[in-house]
Amino acid sequence: MEGAVVPLPEPAKGSETAARSEAAKGLKSNAVGMLSSVVIGIASTAPAYSLAVTLGLIVAVAGIGLKSPAIMLVSFVPMILIAASYYYLNKADPDCGTTFSWVTRAIGPKTGWVTGWVMVAADVIVMASLAQITGTYFFSLIGADGLANSLFWVTFVGVAFLIIMCVITAIGIEVSARLQWFLLGFEYLMLVIFSVVALTKVYTSSPAPPGSVHPAASWFVPNMNLGALSGGVLLALFIYWGWDTAVSVNEETERKSIVPGIAAILSTLALVFIYVLATTAAQAFHGTTYLANNSNDVLSPLGNAVLGSGLDKLLIAVVLTSATASTLTTILPGARTTLSMASHRAIPGIWARVSPRFQTPVWGTAIYGVLSVVWYVGLTLLSQNVLADSIAALGITIAFYYGINGYAVPLFYRHHLFASWKSVLLLLVFPLAGAAMLTWVLAASFDQLWYPANSASGTSWFGVGPPFILGAAFLGAGVVGMILFRLFSKRSRPFFARRMETVDAMVPWAEEQEELARPVLGDEALAAQAAGTASTTAASATEESEHPGRAA
Image (cartoon, rainbow, N blue to C red; front, side, top):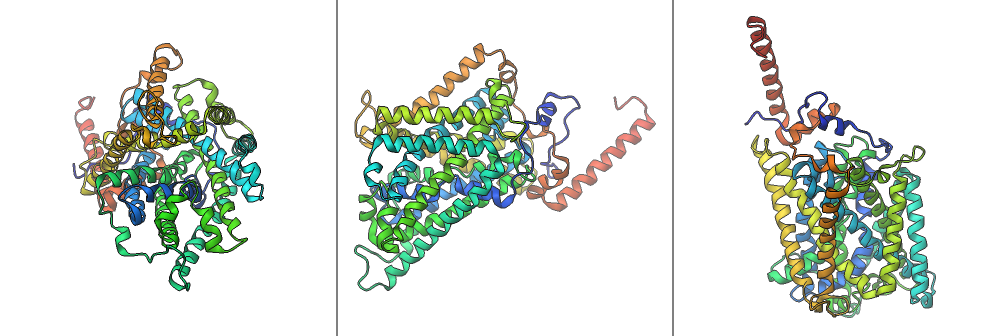
């Protein structure tokens, strides 16, 4: 097996896999470069917004306290491992459906359909939270605190915001990418400035800020009980979620089998840096009790003390722009996942319609926008607690569809796992390690969300915590939807008739075939494989000339 190769061999001419792989969806090629792809990946996580609404909850978990930076580091480990899994799966199959397409090929169409559903459901669910935070922060930014507390006006602005973001996304990927540059640049820079100023004041102010504490090395060591660790990681999973958007726009990215995967890895690296820095600075400035008491939003209360009167509005603007950027980059993968599912005949064809003018899935984007608005308004009218509980249940969906990628890699590459020690690490050990960690998080999230005390309202549904029921309902609805489409959709019958595939069945992108193998086997193994192939071909030709018909 030492000479085995990871590049994708050419399938038989006319094969079904070749036809599917070569089918174009109508998206605009080469519209996104490397830097824009990284920007999209980082912006989709909404770093400022995620920190503002999650950091206080993390430090409030019993047993964590000052070790919130350690939680950020521990949570980064499965993220970087799964980002590497995205890299290798995207190399083989740069499909905008990403996990849906990969799981369908590696594990099977039924699991693939449910995974696609979970991906889209997670995107729609979080849109309600983004719309809510946008409406609230918009009025806070202009000083209209009364309107910021008005459910009607916050919802009105949130709905208008969702519609505007859908229109921008439908106009074109390039417009979205250019807007992301400004939004993310402002957001990332302000978080760095906030962190540096806060740490400077902790060490130089006299008297020191109330409750401040100097950072220590112990903050970054995760020596805590398993319950505290799982609780913190479950919350931090939401903070890191979203970098996979960089891969969702792969069919519109330059060198689509290479650049998106690299961008995903770079995005996670940029995220762990800003998260550890901002977390350390925030808790050093006023201590963990202050953060826990302001768990709904830790950045705005810190703004005045850290940056001074007037400049504190910048942190409000940062959270607002963060939510804006994240909304744009949440619409992108949602519309493209459904585009891929429709192109694979897993759902109705209307989702596969692409605008000839804008070269974007306009119909899918519009339907996605309508679903988001209906979900947001419906939950708002029902209960603010239900809205909060639905966001709490997101950890279940995120852990599920991120983790399943780790299991897909060794299955997809199963004929090449032991080609070299690099193959063992990159295609077997690392993906399974990331998947195992996220499976543990998934189990821990079900366990924690079971208890009513962990819901936003502290109430129970049938004696169980509402987040648990909502999370189970999201997954269960995917299973029910899959069964219904399999039984009653004539269009979807070819999709559900597909069998598990391996990387060997894929059509390689000719100009990048050599690059596909190099990260795993290296130049020497490539040369050896090429020489082996050449000698085999020559031997076959000699055999055929000496013994006509034997080869057949």
